[in-house]
Length: 305
Length: 222
Image 1: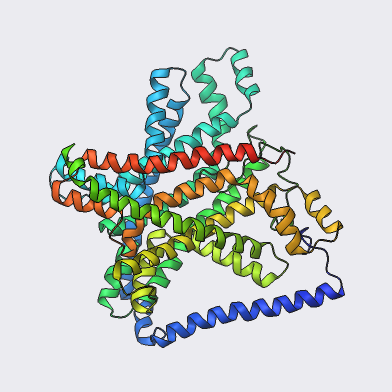
Image 2: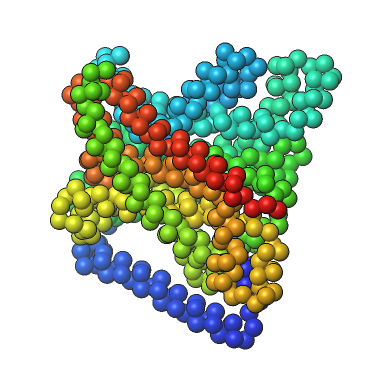
């Protein structure tokens, strides 16, 4: 951290100033935390009584774990379907035939633009009309997540295949491979390596978005933990929010670390000629304009590595 | 089709609420995101840690939880009230939650932008004696902003779409709630759904187009 280039190695005066700033910021952060603590305290949120339920196995067994299971079920099923959807439509968009390429492009662009909650609502209301009565919360959540994330993944697939240098496919054609062989044997294996980090980041988004099921009363972690549990234990709303918040953050951070690790691995991988592509919608900046700035950048975090 | 025409005024009013939420959240999240990124690159380790922790927690929490917590937890339980009128209050609660959530993504975008500024720029700024705040304000951030116009556009598009989650924050005036009300009465109606989708696309597509153009025009030539 000390090697970051945004500021000099501190001299005596700067060191005093930095010390002062540190003290001031510690005080400011502590003041904010204390303010939150006091706010909670004033409303009696630290009473052992309302935190008690989370120390008992029964609470976890009846509320939190079934909800977590619901969340994971929806996430896993939707992830598998979205990957299939993404692969099919991503490859369809790369097709040489306009009658495949254009409809696939329209589908991908439209589903990417629809707010996910509206899509879930629509499926939720449409399903009983088409399929007859029943519980369609799971289907609505899974299909909504599949269509939206699948469309985003289709773009990832397309970007991944484009990220393989042109020489690779030219060489493959030159040795006499057919179109389908070039794609299957040369482009896709390299593209998948480059796509991996972006795919995992999108799966984090998918896992997070399963929480939208709460709004249509799908039995997920947010529903059991934040709606049913506080109804059973009066006053435990805020502890419940904190506990399930920690579970969500832990799940997503674990997946995010996996993405970072995969990205670092594929950056130095020699199995692919393609550079890892940025996660869609993420803030990653493509380094097209000023190439080679990648490693010269001034990220304070880079100096740690 | 007549369903759409019958509910159009109601849906339009709902959509207007989405737009109002988007405007408030855009301004607030850009400001808060810039403050956060300044914290994350500052020379003070405490501020850096605070910024990092905030971004990592907020970014990994579902927006639904953030909004539901803002409404049920902060507002109902802890007594954070912006206004005595329930709808106005829930509007600002949702705007606050959405801004706090989006700010984490704005911060990440800007940090990626700072990473694209070449080392020499910061070294030159230091060499002519600029302080940390001066070099950030006059050298680094202007270039960082210009590098991330397109990603910031994506963040803003996602935010506009996220305004539909306002329902989770107890704000029942937006177009998602209006669409649900209409569906409750006439059943799933494809024209109504498509009408709202087209309205959203009419906002998000120009944002993408405009930021894309701006990004190309303002790209820092290196």
